[in-house]
Image 1 (cartoon, rainbow, N blue to C red):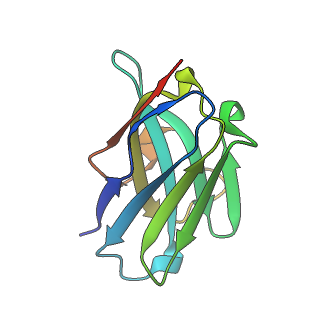
Image 2 (cartoon, rainbow, N blue to C red):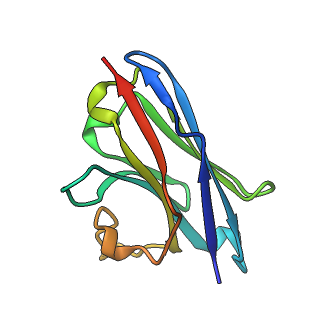
Length: 126
């Protein structure tokens, strides 16, 4: 069973940087999984933020140029480097993992992902 545990959430100010980390355990082969980050605010659906599928990286338009997703297979971690944070980035951030996507799968939908962490809160004050 794949387990994901996020950390790194904090209260920061507009323009600050923050690095979220997610420790992944239970994968039988790290290279056969896509990994990603989503975020959610109260009353809204879980929103896609970033994904890494094999060697391809994907981002929601609102974070392009500011956020970077990376994976360290030796340490079994998935990181999300967030720069130039804005108040609208405030949310509960979740990391996720699932077997590598094929071209027909919409990885921007939360329902396309199999494994989830418990979330870490990021709050950006104005």
